[in-house]
Length: 132
Image (cartoon, rainbow, N blue to C red):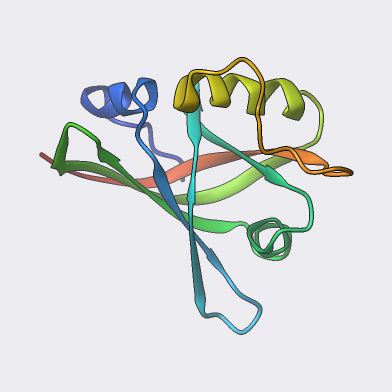
């Protein structure tokens, strides 16, 4: 069952608001990582490098949770629980450059590692919780 992100909280995706992404380790323990994110329609999108822990986790178990705190008001946040419904390398380099522009104000992602393969993940929200 999908759920739309409340209109009142969509502005968080246009701000330099970091998201905290929770994935599940093979033994069920949570793993949490700060990520840059974006909104494409009703999907939350983030970018990572192939082979990182969050990449391995969501490929094995697509259930995730994500919290985005308003950088202007830490008491205002959006929490999403859902599933990664698409994983693709297509357009991932351009996407990380777009996120670098949003979060760092630069045209190209400056932390690219040699041989790194970028990946885009689409999360379909199933539950949204808000405050503020």
